[in-house]
Amino acid sequence: MENKNYYITTTLPYVNAEAHIGHALEFVRADAVARFKKLQGYNVFFNTGTDEHGIKIFNKAKETGVTPQAYVDDYANRLKLLLPKLGMMEDVNFIRTTDPEHVKSAQAFWKKCAESGYIEKKKYSVKYCVGCELEKTNSELVNDCCPEHPNMKLELIDEENYFFKFSSFQEKLQKFYKANPDFVIPSFRFNEIKAFVDRGLSDFSISRLKSKMPWGIEVPGDSEQVMYVWFDALVNYVSAIGWPSEMEKFNKWWPVIQYCGKDNLRQQSAMWQAMLMSVGLPNSKQIIINGFVTAEGGVKMSKSLGNVINPLDVIGDYGTDTLRYFVLREVHPFEDTPFTASHLKEAYNANLANGLGNLTSRVLKMAETYGVALPEIEITEKLEEGFPEKFTTAFNEYKLNSAMDFVWNLISESDSYIQREQPFKKVKVDPAGAATDVKILLINLVTISKLLQPLLPEISEKVIAAVRAGKALATPLFMRKE
Image (cartoon, rainbow, N blue to C red; front, side, top):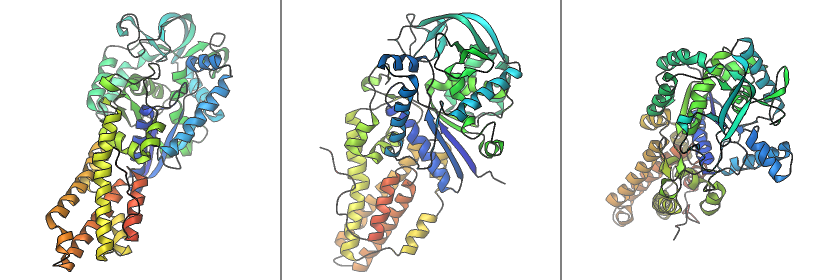
């Protein structure tokens, strides 16, 4: 019998700056998948939240003259307020790594990992990128800088910390990857992580001295050390569904589908999977890797580089569903894609204002003028139909741009039908034929609306309501931008 419980999560944004378009991309894509699964009849647990510990947070709070807790409370609240503006599902779970239950879970995870023999304490010296919150080897550096954060000076850490015995998991991970050939999507990212593991694994530090960096979860049994931010944050995927205090809930939902960016590849698909193995938990099911949204000229957007786009600015100018449209269709699901004002405007005018918006206006105007209406039973039956196989396949492969293309092909076919059949001319000589044409077009609008439910839920509701009303639109769905 098929398991109808489905758990999907985003990674947790680090609350050291305002949310940017990259976060919106990950949130919206995961939301679309979660909505689609719900429409297929699944019970869905959709998780997101905030990553709130570590040196970057500690330093930012100190700079602004507030306590770390006050600092993260402010930014977590801002992110929480952003979610409905992105059109996210109302019942999305929002976890914070400062939540008491998460703290307990992280400490329980540490204890179990230590009891299994995978944690040891030792002295070490290493170069460390605060931007990545990761140790860096010389081979990873460009001009002695982290290539992801070239404007940030590397720190030298020389202290005694706890280490996770990552080196013990090379063979286990290789075996797991071989048994799960679609574990990381897309395949070329999977090849990257397999090559990384094949080169050999080094143990990594999972704690910091509390005297140097006090903002973290205390290590069980050692009040002088706090957990390294990555160790703590990754545990959210199990703490969100009750591990270890609510195992019935945990077993209901686990494993999870993780939506993340390609810069998290190592942490999510190797480090975290090894950590799960260390405590005897089943591995995550799949990891979906996004490309970056880039700025003009293909330059990576980054909070540290200061060239990010605020999603609220886009929503303010164009609306929620325009932002969702752009990140779902115009941004490649796995490759880097530029996000520019000109590209956004061009896509909006061509595909929303002149595409979906214009089609809806024309069909409803003809329906009202010719006195054509769809019976409620036909609308309901159409909305309750299953999804087309090609559309479902696009979702199952996380190619949401292909799902959007499928919808826009229907829009294009409807436009072509109007041009071919010309009901606006036919009505003068064959009113019944024109009415049949308009009814076909109304049914097409209902089909389009159904397919848009997981993708552009706000506009989907508007189109369905308009078809039910059977009247011309008082105002266009999308106003063309000049």
